[in-house]
Length: 188
Image (cartoon, one colour):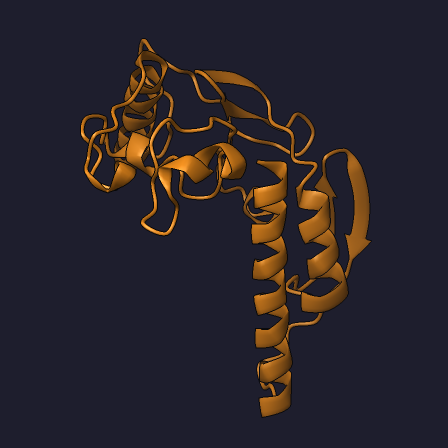
């Protein structure tokens, strides 16, 4: 988000905190939803409007969206369609999605409805730390602010990496992914 903003590229964000009524992954049982909560990709069925007889639900396609979830789905479908056609997810006569900037952190919060407000990016502090300490994906000095704290980092971009460097990087990515999944499960 910071890189896009620094390059004058519009950024629109949302935080999905809605715990779905129906399962969204084959590896997730219907009974596990309450423990997993809202995780990455759990909003995808809303974006595509899969609201009736969801095929993954309980293995027999018997789960349907609640009334609240139908409204969330309609809002997300309209926003994604607007984004694809105009580059802005705001909908005429509907949800006015604010452009994100580092000072206000405005976006859309999805809980039991889609509402405009300040999005809590406090989880980004963890990922900023991983980036700053281990990955150094920034190619120049960048102010990396998340959730109200600011740290400055300078990373170096190198075009040639040894096999060992690539293996270490792959290992760190794997660790980062595993930690992210664990945090998602615990915070859900």
